Length: 165
Image (tube, rainbow, N blue to C red; front, side, top):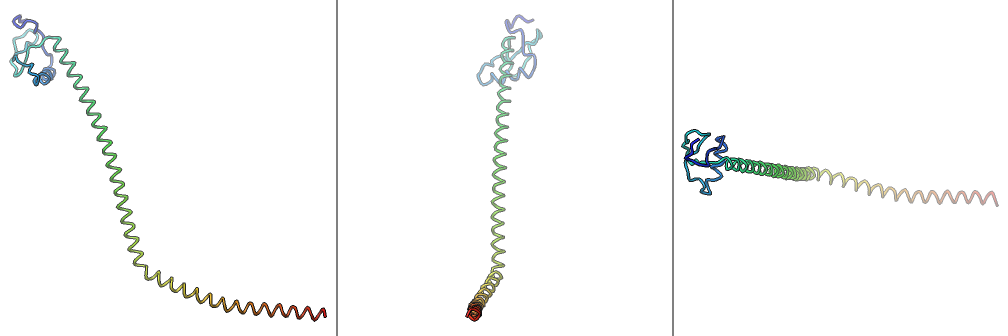
């Protein structure tokens, strides 16, 4: 091991962990050295590199894991939000389609009613005329029935009074 670097004898064991460390510390300004020692070998010149102790490495790995968990949690929440939004959009689209269908149905129905309106009026007029004729015939027949009943009743009374009297 190179004693020149003192407590910084261990390093990040994977490039990914090192990159996560760099990303985590770049904005805070903690990166000010440009070499890293890898398991006692000569320093490796890396752009933005830093000498790292074992404890710091473990800390950075832990932070990276926590950030990854947070990113996963946020992604799951975003996924849920997208699913909810998609469901709402599907419901909205279904309702709009239903409304369009109802409007189209009502429009078609009113057009067809307008087409058959003259026939309907003719049939209703014919029915009214027939009803008036039937009523007139009924009045005539009512009078005939009344006269017939009076005559029948009178005959029955005459017949009864002749036999009794």
